[in-house]
Image (cartoon, rainbow, N blue to C red; front, side, top):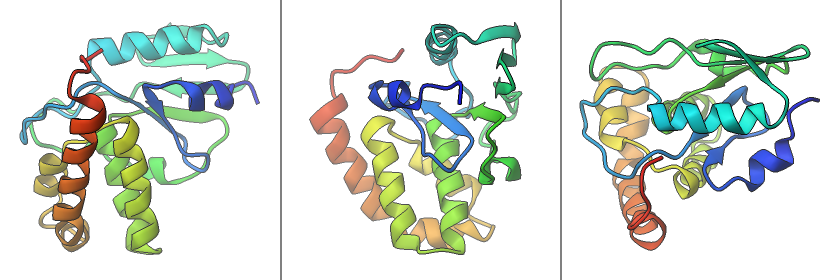
Length: 177
């Protein structure tokens, strides 16, 4: 494997889970519910530097490559309050990884929790929040009329309370990348 996952796990800004082809990164702890769900310039630059240090080369604005591994910056959705979720994010893939926002990462976990133990996936969302706060209002708003709506609504208050505590304890003075 050409990605140093131990180094990724030690980084205080980056979050990943071993069975998902995803990386996300802390950006901020202030959210607007109808915001664009895209990586900021600071997030992109941090990821590019981090993975360049691991030997990856940027071949385009949307792709970094090393050996047979490709790291993708998905094309951002240009519409406000739209989901950036893709079915491809649900499947383990040792050759293609995606850089996504913390909110999209949480949305992936909610999708996985629909057919599995919801409590286990809510705990994973909390792990995500420990590194990268998420835009809970946006996630709830963009999924209110689909299958995720009831799951998100059921856990919303608990996650909102948990995130407020984490931000107060850990991120109150942290600046965006």
